[in-house]
Amino acid sequence: MIMKRGKFSNAFTLTEMMVAIALICIAAVGVLDYQYHSAKHQRLAQTQITASQTAQLLLEDWKSTGGSTVYNPSDLQLGFTSSSVPSGFTMGESATINGVPMFIVLGFNDVEQDAISGTTLRQLTAMIRWQLGKATGSGGTTLCQSPIIFNTYVRLDGS
Image 1 (tube, one colour):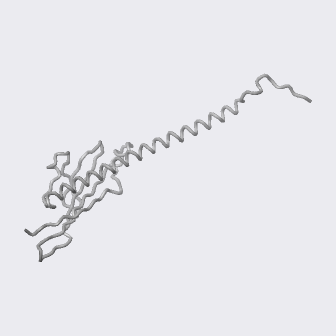
Image 2 (image 1 turned 120 degrees about the vertical axis):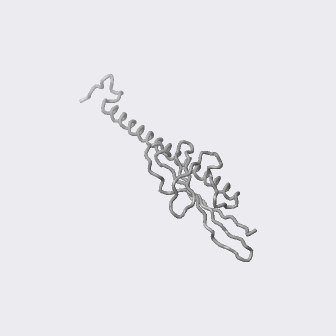
Image 3 (image 1 turned 60 degrees about the horizontal axis):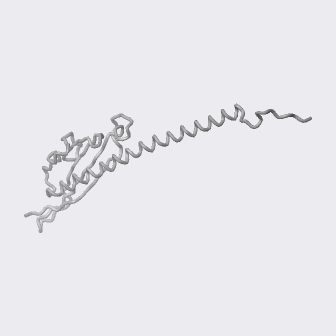
């Protein structure tokens, strides 16, 4: 028995069209999700770079004062304001950089002293944390779990 083909036999069936549309929708959702996470990670990376540059700026400026115990980043007039300080650190600052609140803690420790030459080796430390929600654009006030910590050393002469 020979069956005749209809005049629309070369067309797609409704089921084939629905499956194709479903696959396209799943692929589109995947691409949009990837773009969202990629933009979120780009903002977080930019915040980490900014925090690193800020820590480096503060340490270099503090080092230029000879590692003074009364160093005050607010004197730079770049928007730093004093804030509470965790134990073990000497100075706390906060600033909003690129719309992200950053909390900066500065500390020093006299590592070694040479009585003969009258010099002291002082370690200067800058630790910066920021709000994750502001950095990633998702809101919230949780602080990052892995802060940026930079150290440098300065030699204090006895003269």
